Picture (cartoon, rainbow, N blue to C red):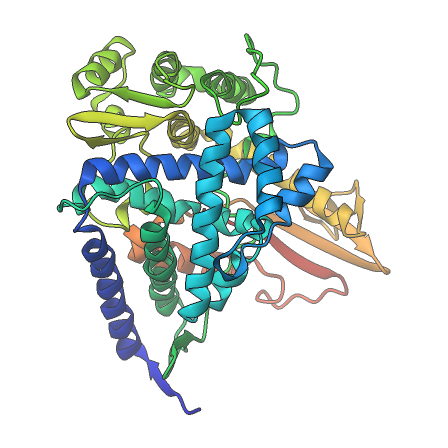
Amino acid sequence: MTSTKLTGQDARDLIESQLDQHASGIRNALAPFGPLAAVGAWLETLRAIEELINLPGELDDSVLELALFGLSLRDGTIAPRQLKFILHHLGYLYGSAFAQRQARLLVQLSAMQFSFTMHGLPAAAIGLSTVGHAVGYLQSRRRHLVSLLYLLPVACRGTILMTNVNALTWMLPQAEVSGTTLTGLLQQRAVSELHDDFALFLDPRGFTASHSYATLDDMFLEAERVPIIEVAADARPIGLEPLRPDRVFSAAELRNGVALTEAAFAEFKLDKTAFAGPATLVRELSYRAEDDFWVTLSPAELSALADSHGVSTAHRQALVASSKTFVEPLNSYPAFVTVGGELRGTVTLLSRFLYNFKNVCLYRSRRFQIRSGFIFEQRVKDELARQGFAVQPVKRIDRKEFDVIATRGGVIFNVQCKNNLVDPSWIDLNPARFVRTNQTLERYYQRRSPRSAGERSSSGTILAWTGWSRS
């Protein structure tokens, strides 16, 4: 099979045309639906998806885990006896409504597995081959699925009713075919500016790129400088509430999450930043949650609450989705969408908003920037030790100071750790800044490299840096 090679502006022009095509495709696919029903159905489906993604950390019944995560979703059919067993036990643990949501979700996932197989999308089909595979697949697509929610109130202009029964079969193809393609194209657009020899290779099946955007993490996590797990070990949250065992998510868990975040980052005086107002606002909103999950209020009510907690105009605006394109919400974290004159949100969306807002506040702190570097050094040491290196207590060799020194197989490895904040949203929203920042860092590290300075060393030199990943 022959292919055509495109370079330079020709390659970039093709990427731009594909970006427009897929963005228009999402808007056109959503246009026939009525916004009120679509938002309601998709919120309900997202709730079921989030519950399924979190079940591996909740269940402690090995028999149920084996039956659930080993359940085949292939060919659009599900083993009825195995499904009945699973739903019976899920209903016993989490209630009949929970079991019904999972039943609808699993049936729709099975239908989508068959559809992806028939339409020649093998990677997506394999990702939905079993429930266990589907957990990882849905986690990898979570960012795109939530972005569709933010777009619905604007993109839906018709009268067709989307329901809980068919929401996933309408929405998942948009995330899979156009959503993931858009993020890939945006990355290719940025990478094309970083490499002079970037090229696209076209064949009848599509095109591939000579270079790709690679991340160090593989858990589809939101990008952040210091994850809470790095600083939470010694945290002592105040006023933690007991959690009901029959809830995967709850308002009490949201409040506990706020307390844990405050305690984990207390050394950086998080409570003295703009985080304090939204944190107390989220706490108050959590007490309004219906079914321990839904939070609904009017714009006027939110404005009044924001006033009472001293939340600035800019920050209260960030609470509510206002995106008109699919790309914009890929890089935002609103807690509410506006539909039917109401603001509709969930405890999970509130948690997502506040956790990201914590980063917005901390990244302005010089102390946090410095401390995060030492935290990253420890991460590198731990990872080297895990891989069989012997981390040494010394810091200097031949009058040169290194962040980490390790040995293995008689070789000394000098490791420099650089914790740079390169916001991955720039790839989508400000590619010129992303390219400029990367080029600046590359030149800086080349100057700092011993080889570029004409030095010789018998030891190995490694440059370690933080990696960003996106959900």
